Image 1 (tube, rainbow, N blue to C red):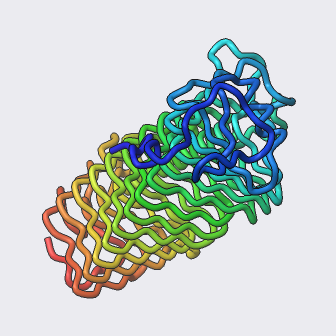
Image 2: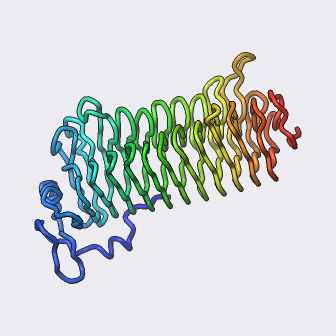
Image 3: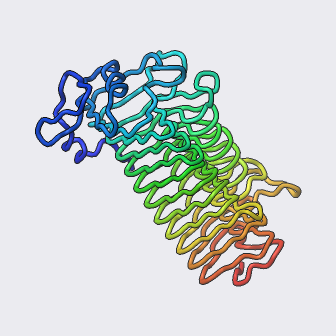
Length: 390
């Protein structure tokens, strides 16, 4: 599933002109400013934009950024309210460009809205950008970003947020968009410490050298609805999602086919996480002694609530030993507060028992089942799980 260049957006775009004006156009019903297919024209249009202006890019144009606008910044940083209609255009850091730079940077007080656009090839490193965050797009505290029908692909950050990074007190709203093939140490696709809203989007094939292959939520709040987090990888933990701060609510979504080494093939959680009518499936923990193929819920701060959700066909399949077993293809709960309400854990597998759910503290099951897991559902376990049989 990819949400790119929606035809309805393209059809509504302004006619393509071959020059750029510095103020809003007023022809017909379109008050946007047309930007010709030229990187220089795009840079000039952003620099000269009035507050709350809309720029309309040349249809299907590729804007190649070969040199940074300023140190570490591909385009002029955004400090005001600005809308950019992509009309199917791509803004890309050219493969021959030097030095490294990100594509967009939203400063405090800035409000950037991107529509029908591809943001590609940005590269944020500590040496060149000062932070190493947000290879494609960086949102500072007090800044705001809204993506609609946008692809954020093939971006890299040396620290966090290969595709997008949102700082504390920053805001990002992502709708009908695709964040894919990005790379960072944490949060391969997206890193957020601010307020995050995601609807009808996909995070796929991103990679994190440490944690949060698809998304790393490290603070603030995240609301994720009708979204797929799939085929992401993380070397250490949280192949799909690493949840380490604030509050996260996921509804009617799917976390599937993600992979990590040691903890939480699909999700690793150490904060407050609710899964409502969602599916965690086909995720893998692959390293020796790795646990929680589907979900790893850890520490007393890890509060995990499953409501009408299913954890199915996940696996923890690394090598095992007596002192370091590979357990819980479904859910591994390590001192966390875990509640299953009208949910089930089924058809998961691990190298060592239990294959379904392992916990070292009591958990709460309400009209929920743990069945058809291998080699066992719930035994051996440090505590008894009422209602779980093998």
